[in-house]
Image (cartoon, rainbow, N blue to C red; front, side, top):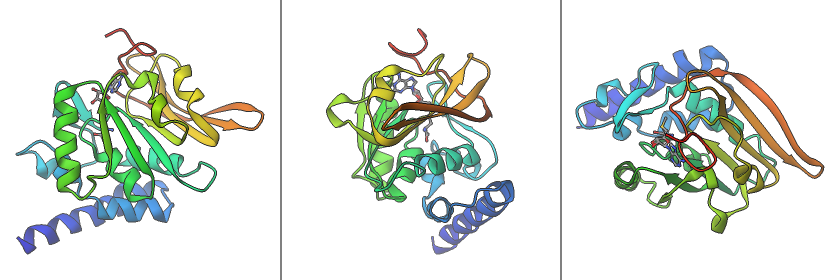
Length: 220
Ligand SMILES: C[S@@+](CC[C@H](N)C(=O)[O-])C[C@H]1O[C@@H](n2cnc3c(N)ncnc32)[C@H](O)[C@@H]1O
């Protein structure tokens, strides 16, 4: 088994060097977390060998685990919130990998998924990988988690037609919301910051995500 663990660790080293550092990811906290979190555990059984490729991978129910580079960028943006880093909301739990990374870099994580089967699997994976403290819930993440708000960071792993107001309202001052916004086929990564003077918005490049389905997202 030690051989397999060593091979997976080497896969992660390669992923970090070729997919992240080579593309300019510099935040050491993110690079260390990506070296540490065992991404292959978050893939469906039989697909573990696809875990460290430079692309998204299907996880069932028509959903995907995002490309490592995108997850690294979103984690770095979450860490750009004004310190101290405390609670984060992860919308679209999927496999649970993004939630694990947010926990690994120091957030207390609440993660919300609309599909119960994925939430259940993610809960089990997170516990097996040592991130059992992540609070995985089932519900419509376009409405956030009012009982756990406010958040330092909100990371949305699915694409919205517009920024859901419920999410920006659940940011604390200095907090950051990171989410893809656009059409069903192409989006911009949007970063919304709550400052003492109101909300500031910037964009951080084009991306393609599955739709965020809910009251403040897409209908289906
Ligand atoms: C690309 S996957 C997210 C990948 C995930 N971050 C990971 O690390 O595996 C998008 C997820 O968002 C979920 N989703 C879509 N709309 C949602 C909503 N309104 N609330 C919560 N989850 C939602 C989908 O069911 C899917 O699991």
